[in-house]
Length: 236
Image (cartoon, rainbow, N blue to C red; front, side, top):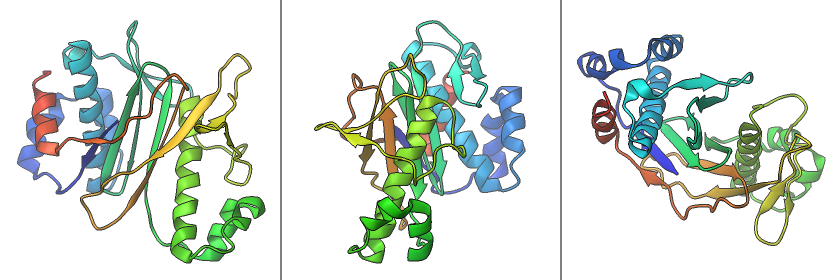
C-alpha cells in the first residue's frame, strides 16, 4: 500500500521536465481534465504506479504495457505481473499492488448533513447511526462508501445502479468483512479499512478489497512527490 501527498503544484518548467515522457495516450487522458489539480493528481497516480511496477519487475517505462478492461480498469498486459489499483481524492493519491485482483478507494472526509447521510445509507444502515454524533455518522458513511467502492473496483465494474450503499451488505466471518463475488466462478473477497495519516488538515478514509490469501498491511507507505519524480525518471 502506497500513497503520495500533493503538497504543492509543480511550476510549468518542472512539469515539462517529466510530463512529455509519458505515453501519448496517458498524456491525452490527463490533459482532458480542466483543473490543474486534477491533471497533477492523475500524473502523480501514473508516476506512482509506473515506478512501483517498473522497479518491482525491473522494466523500463517503455516496457510497461498498460491496457484497460471493458469497464476502464487498468492492468499490465504482461505475463506474471502483479495486480494493482489506484484511487485519488483531494490531495491524496493511493495505490495497492497485490498478487491477485485488488481494489482500493480513498475519499476526503467532508461534512454532510444527517438527512443526506441517512438517505444515502438506506434505512437499515442508517438505523445504526441513530445514537451517533454527526461526526461519528460522517465517519461511518465514508467507511462504508470506501468499502463499497473498493469492492466494485476489485470486481472491475466500478460504481453502478445495481449496487448502492443501501444494498451493500458485507458479512463478518470472525476475521474480516467478506463479500461474495459477482461472477459465479469467482471466490470471495476480504474487505478492510486502513488508517491514513494525512499530512494535511483534512482527513481521509481508505479501504481495500482483496482476496483472503492477501494480507492487509499494517500501514501505508508514503512517497514524497520529488522522490517519486526521481524514481520515475530513472525508468526512462
